[in-house]
Amino acid sequence: MGLEQGVIDRLIACVGKDGLRQGEAVTLRDPGTDHDNLKSGLMVLLRSTEEVSRVVAACNEVGIAIVPQGGRTGLAGACRTRPGEVILALDRMNAIEDMDVPGRTVVVQAGCTLGRLAEACAESGLSPGIDLGARGSCTIGGLVSTNAGGMEAFRFGTMRQRVLGLEGVFADGTIVTDLSRVKKANTGYDVKQLLIGSEGTLGVVTRASLELVPAPGPTALALVACAGTSTAVTLLHRLQSIPGVRLWRAELMWRNHFEVTARDLKLDRLLELAATPLYVLYEVAAPTQHDADIALEGALSLALEEGLIADALLASSERERRDFWRVREEWSVDRVYPGGLWFDVSAPISRLSEYAEALVGRVKARDPELDIYFIGHLADGNLHVTVNSKRPIKDRYEEIAPLVYDGLEAMGGAFSAEHGIGLEKRDALAKIGPAGKLVVMRRLKMALDPKNIMNPGKVMEPFA
Image (cartoon, rainbow, N blue to C red; front, side):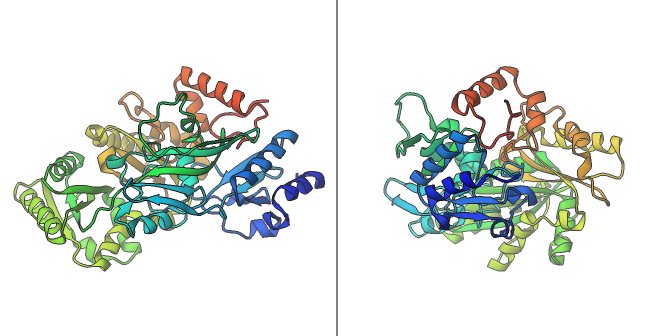
């Protein structure tokens, strides 16, 4: 059911005719990772925080639900919409407003993509301190709203640690501008933390002040065949302890993911690596390319002599670097076996193997025809788990999810690591989330959004 013309006219009064899209003008856009993202068929394109405030206040007054959207790259269903809801698109709010190079901070609008920000930072020898495969389309507002992690989180933290200050709009249209650019700012309640990771259920992020880090400089990259997670972690710690060298990334993948992806991408040379249970991409940074190459080669040579690893390939060209990263970042498993289930969990790195083996056992006991594929971020224990079969199994999520989540909380892990809760994990949060935490979350939601217009039904069950 769509919105009444009176409501649409009111939205046009807030943003002008050019700021409103309906019907095919919305549905013909790229929906991103979920076909239901644009199902509402009504989108408002914002150009300023003041416009966001006017639209949110108008929707709140008449009780119309709104769903903030960035690059629509989320994997937990937080951007799904229904007819009768209003999409708040922040595409036009994409300016990099002020970069303080000496202070290593930047103020950026929510619609700016991570890739564009990274390119701008690189010109001054800096980096946002976060990177992920969707860098070309994911936006800063979306990263903040989902508390995104990525490949560098073990060094620089998730978005919660990257954010120094925020500007946001709450459900009644109130604008809170706290764009602090310092780490030490004890000025009362830290309101920005209410928006970070809230997935648009408490307010809309419009601008962010971020801490930047020095760019890595020259790096060396190797694809390493490891016998298991324990040896992979041992090599990880060695690389972290080399003087003058920084371990920049450590990305792992189990053999079945590696083989399926390499074959799908026709990267046959990579399949010549020794057959081992898992493979890790180790990337180190150093002041010069020579230093980076020598450090990585030396560490790998010693590891080979000791039998710590079975084989390794060092990237010797940009093409090889791209190929190595493609075999980690491409979703070939889903192309080859469509209709699988994705999960995003984390476990202590000392217990990754224990968790993975137990999960495979549970799933195979339930159905021997199911296959489990693991990739992830070795240094912080974040695993991306895909369960697939020769036929689509999307209808088995409720059956499989408890098998994936079993034991994680007890070992100090988490059933949701970096993708957020959205709709997909809402029931899991209600079942296994700490009871006291859920009570406080609901109180916050009811206090800040009493009419339940802010991305209703995401993260927590809707309330009347």
